[in-house]
Every structure is written in structure tokens, then in C-alpha cells.
Amino acid sequence: MEYIFYSEIVRDKILNEIEDPTLNDARASNILNQIISYAVLCELTKAAFSRYKDFTALRAIYEIVSSDLDADRLDFASRDGKISGLLGSTGDVNRIIKFLNLLKLDKPKQFHFMPSIQTLNDIEQVLTDRFIIYKYLVCHHKVIRFDYLIEKAVSLLIELEMNSRASEGKTEIEERINIGNDILQLIDVLNKNRNLEGRMYRLSQIDDFWLMNVLRGKYFELLVTPRGNLSENESRLLFLLDEIFTGSRKLKSLWKRDHQFFDFIEKVLSEKGDKIAQLLENLQRLYPEFGNIENILQRIREFDNQDKKDRRDTCVRFMELLDLAVKLKKDWLQTFVIKFEKSIQDTIGCENLCAGTMHKLRTGIKDLKLYAYSKDDRLQIVDIRDVSNIPQHLDNVRKDSTRFVIYSPYRLSQVINQLIDIFVDIIEKELLYSRSG
Image (tube, rainbow, N blue to C red; front, side, top):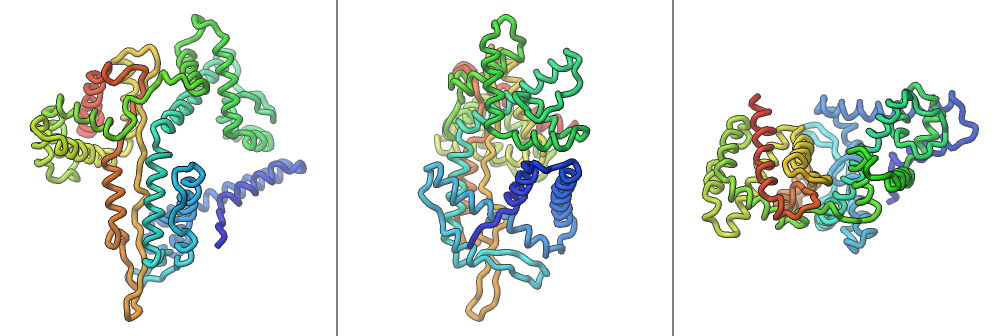
């Protein structure tokens, strides 16, 4: 079966149109209206799904591109593992698709695309391999570090360019098709007051190669500038770009593997166990979803008396409670990262940049169901968790995984005490005080 990726078809259509030399404002406006209509239709469809639970005919179609085994996820598992060299192959994707059926259920009346239980072995392999790619490739500490460096460098460069233009009294970006090394084109392509044709030409040129050329040009510009003439933000940007282009590795992960992360959590519970237990007890009053946590509170208070295995289990259960709090307080993840980074910078007083960033490791399994037929040909719908231990296994691995990474030019032993204080302080202020206040 041949894969059809509608998003790629739309992309190719747009690129072909904007590269057409006969393009004029009228045609360009029509193309833009088509794109907007497509986007609006997607949003309205998703809104309808969330509002009307029995609006399931379209939902079934939507499952092709957004579900636990949609086209993109199947393609990701079979392609990225092999290209990266991490995996040789995965489950038989073609077999999964061959047995994928659109089913009409009577109670309740719904339509669903579901894979067959006959493909369970292949599905388990795909889910396992996809998780391995997430854990050891997408969430590798070097990949997360590089993503962070690029994100921070782009943010700083945009801020510097905006301030520079404001000080020069320039309120507009030069109107041109050749975007050159202007980082603010990332913003300007969204400016509806600009010439549409020019915006679309610019958009077609903004890609990874363009971005790296912009950053490289700024890097050489800062290199030849006397250090005494650099502002604080320019010095930070130079530090980030130096990390990106030379691999100087001044900014290192304080922990690289899961056991090193939990060694840090052990230190937190060992030194601040009573404080943590008190915070969790207070949080329980604010978050009824915590349920009965008396056992984990007792284990935290007696942490130093436990053996190595029990200590690790206590750490895992403690982080599960924090995970739950993160889900309940939606904006906490981003706030945590920002404040952690700032607190490290302020408390430790680093000359160079210190950083904190979250691991976004997920199993990718939400609500995967399979169909089967009994001996008397009656249709049965089963949850994958009822017929496979893979979802539980992957979730256990996720719970035993790193939650966040801290980067610093210092060794962990040099900053461990400050990090512990910051960690406990942020839990108290961001989860407890912000909720109760």
C-alpha cells in the first residue's frame, strides 16, 4: 500500500505555486486563501471532535493522521530507526495497514479505524522501536543540548536585532525578496501589511541552511569584535554560537544517564526529605488527585534507612507525584524550566550560561484498541493493555527515565548544594504557593 501524506501534498502545491514566475498578487492571494481555508477546516474539525462526542464519522478519518498508529508515526518508526542506524528494522508496517479496518460500532454508535489483533506482534514491535527512537535518539542529552543552544541563540539574536533597529530609529524591515542574513525575516513573513508576493518568496527561502548561515555570519561578526565592546547579551550569544560551531563543550550535562539523574534525586531526598514530605503533604490538600500518599511520605521521611533498591523506588514514586502535579498545573513545565535556569544563573553566579531543559519522553500510547472476532464471528474490541504488557513495560521505563537536564560549565559536585536548594524552592513556590495563592 502506498502512503499518502496530505500535509506533504499541500506543501509541494504551495512551493510549486510560489516558484511560478507568472505569480501575481491576485493568484498569490487566492493561494493564501486556500491555505487559510485548509488550516481553518482542520481547526474546526478538531473543535467539532472535542465538542460533539458522537460526531464520529469525521473523527474516524482524522484517526488516519492523528492516532496512536497514524501514518506519520508508522513512517517514523520504520524510517528514522533505520536511517539513524539505531535499529535495523521494525514490525511489518504493511501488514498492520493491510488489516486496518473502518469499523461501525453500535454501542455507542461510533466509527473507528482499528488494527487487527492478528497484527499484535507487529504493533508491539513498532511501539517498542518508536519508544527506543524517542528515548535514545530524540531525547538523547546531546540532541536536547543542541536544540536548546539553537533555540536560545535564535531568541537572543532576534532580541538583539530588534533592539538595534529600535535604537537606529528603523521601524520597518527592508522590503526585498532576497532575505539575506536578516534573522527578523522569521517575524516579518507573518506581517500582513507586507507585499504578499514578497512574503511568500521569503518564506520559501527560510530553511535550516538559511538559519545556520545567519547564525554563522553573526558568529564571525562577534568573533572579530573586541570582547570589551560586547554587551551582556552579545557575550551570551557568542558563548552559545561558540558551543554550536566549535563544539567547545563548555556547557556540559550535569547528568547524562538515567541513574545519574536519580542519584541527584536521591541527594535531594536524603538532605531535604522532611521538607519534601511536608511540601507533598500540603500539595495533597490542593491536589485531591494525589490520593493516599501516606506510604510515600513515610518512605521519604525514612529515606536514609532504606537500602539501594528501595531508595531508587522511592525516588521513582516521588517523581511520579511531580509528574501528576505537572499535568494538573499545565503551565508548570515551562515555568519550571525558565525559573530553574534563572535561579541557577543568579544563585551560582556563573560567568557563562547555565541552562535547564525538560525531557519530553512519552510512550506514545494513549487509547489504542484492536478488533478481533470470536469463534461465532462476533466483533470484539479490546484495549491493547488487556492483551499486551508492552504499554506497561514502556511506561515503567519512562518512569525510570530522566525528567530534566541541567547544563553548566561547572561539575555537579561544585554546584550540587545550590541545585538541591533551587529544586526544592521551585517546587514550593511554583506548585504550592502559586496554586494556594
